[in-house]
Structure formats: structure tokens, C-alpha cells
Image 1 (tube, rainbow, N blue to C red):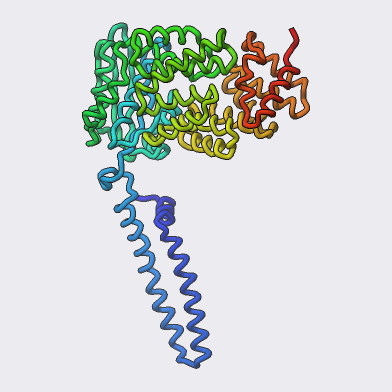
Image 2 (tube, rainbow, N blue to C red; image 1 turned 180 degrees about the horizontal axis):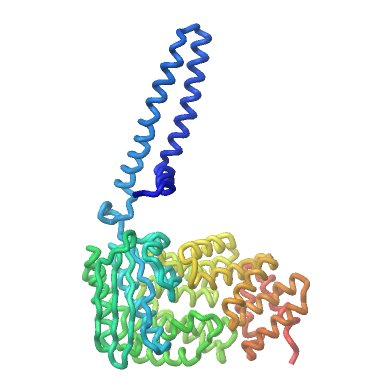
Length: 483
């Protein structure tokens, strides 16, 4: 039996209350007009009573029509069920797979499995697939699947677990209808670890078959081409992705491992593009031993990585971010827009766009991009990137009070990331607090002792107004401790 509060909520949703209120108001006006005409024209007294009767009888009819009209609209076009609207793509979210191993180092295995299934499903023209960023906010939680469906606006949710066991791996997967919470399909796989890619393909095929939205041969081939020839190469990339998500963690070992992979498997797109991104990131954050060599090497890997997977949104965003780091903003924006055309549900693109917009002086667009990022992925990656890029935008606009507030959030989320402390120093100096600004520089050097003003000049000096960029560099030189 439906609860009374839910019933009234349904009345409001179907606009019964709104239509009823409008009818009552209109009826009152009609009745007043009838009384006025009756008095002026000296018509019979029963005229206004007759009008009142007809208006009263019309009220239930209006209510019923309002209820029925909304039902018709829902059936015709806005029902969340894909069975009632063949033109609507079924929406699906793949929640982060759980690492069932006692070894936390195997966390990348579960994350990588999740990412690859999302990527494979995204190639289907028949599905609307939520990106990794949207779903990874649920990592480490046990959410109500129905609530996940409502929050992400999807019809189905896939979840599972991974347990690496030496040379074997055990994977469980289940597909759930979000609205009802009913299980549609479930399977358990116990295979050799080097058969991981085969299991991923089986899972993708099973999910699309269960939804009646099977991948075409061409789509499936495109998805499989993104996979490396060996499990070890895949593992290196997944580990690198895991650490690169943590700001302030500049792991040279990961770069060296990726270099080896790109030599052994030169056609693995993600390895090429991720290496380019990490090399440019190391330069722009002032921690490169040889920035010229790193930039040149990154350029080669970026071009190759982009040529290998020009239609994969994740790969496009990696390349766009790498380009944005070195000031190639126009090309970076172009790749972001291509990625969004392919997959509009990919929020990662928006923090790359926010960076591009901020560094080209389009601050309002930068703010809107971050609003979209937070709306699409309220937790996870947006919890760091949104306040960080908002702080950059505010700093460049000269709104240093707001920049300081945002930078304090960033410092709490990523306390080992040194660049926000440099932006903090600039804002504190602008606010007339030079002693606190010098303390922020001291914290920067505590985290990265080899950083110099010259090594981060390309980052801090990259400003829409060149004179302002140079002024910021001069401010840092004054604040920097003398040798």
C-alpha cells in the first residue's frame, strides 16, 4: 500500500496539484464574472448557481486529465525502462570491483578490471556507459544499488570482485536492475591470471547479451585493440594510473617501467599516452632532472599514443592533459571536445577543459566546466581537481581571498603536493601577509627540496596576461629563501 506522503508527492510530480490550483483560481474568476453580469444585466438569480455547479463538476475531470496526461507522457518518452522506449540507450554503471586479496598491492588489479570493462562497454553504440570517475566515488562503500541508479541516472549496475591467487585469478560479476534491485545475471570465473583479458571479454559479452545490446564485431575489435599483448604490460599501466591519481607522488620508477613497456609493446596506446602525461607533469611541477629531454620524449610518445587510439575518450583525455601542461591549449581543447562527442558521460575531460579555459583567460567557462565535473562525479577525482583548478582560476583572476580558501581544501586533500603551496604563497603575498607567504614557500621546499623558481616558471608564469605572469615569478623570487 502506498504511503500517504508518497501519494501526495506523486500528485505533485504528476502536476495534479498545480493544475488543480490553476483551475480553482480560474473558476473563481469565472464565477465573479458571472455574478457581475447577472447583477448588471438583471439576469435570473439561478445563473451564478448554475455556473458554480458546472465549475464544481469540472474539477474532478481536470484532475483526472492531469493524472492521465502525465502517465501518457511517461509511457511515451520519459520512462527509465529501456523496454518501453527503443530509442533510449540503456544506461549502465560499473562499480569499482572489490579487491578480495589480502595483499593491498593488488588493488590495481581490481581497478584495472573495472576500467577495462567500462572501456569495452563504452564502445557499444547501444549503451550509455558511466565513466570510471562517476562510479569510483563509490569505492570502498556498500551502496544501495537502487540509490546508485537514481544518483547516476542509469538503468543497470554491474559490480564484482577480484581475488588474485598466485598464477590464478578469481572474478565474480553480477548485473543488477537498478530500479528494482533484482539480479539479471551473475557469473564466477576461476582462471589462470594470464587469461584475464579473455575473462574481461566474456564479462562484456555477457553484460551486453543480458541487456540485448550486443557489441558489433567492429565495436568489439576496437575495444580489444586497446589491450596489450602481455599481462605484465597491463599491470605496469594500471599501477602507474593508481599512483598518478595521487597528487604529489612523482614516481620515477613508474616512468622507467613505462619506458620499458613502450619499447616492448609499442602499440599499447595507454602506455604511450600515460608516459607522455607523466613526463610533462614532472616538468611542469618542477621535479624534472632534464626538462628539455623529458619534453622531447613526451612529444614522441604523445603523438604515437594518439595515433593508436584516436577514438578512445580516456586516451584522448590523457593526451589533452599532457598538451595542456605544455601550453598547447588549442589542441588540448580540441581533443577534449572530440572525447565528449564520443562519450558525453566522461567527466574527466572537464577538469582538463577547466585548466585550458583558466590558462586562456576564459574564467567563466572554467567555472562551468568544474560545475559539470562536480555534478557528474560529486566525489572521487572531482574532490581534488575541482577545488584545485578553481583555485588556479581564482588566483589568475586576482580573487586571492577565494583562492586561499580553496587552496586550504587542496592542502588537506593532497598534503604532499607542493605546487598548491606556491599558489598559496602568491595569494598570501597579494593579501599583504608576506610572512605567511614565506612559510608556504618553506613548506614547498620541505616537500620538494630541489624545486626552484626557474623550474616552475612555466607553470606559474603561464598566465593569460603575460605581464601578470612575469609579476608572479618576480614575487616568488622575492619570497624564495636565499642560498
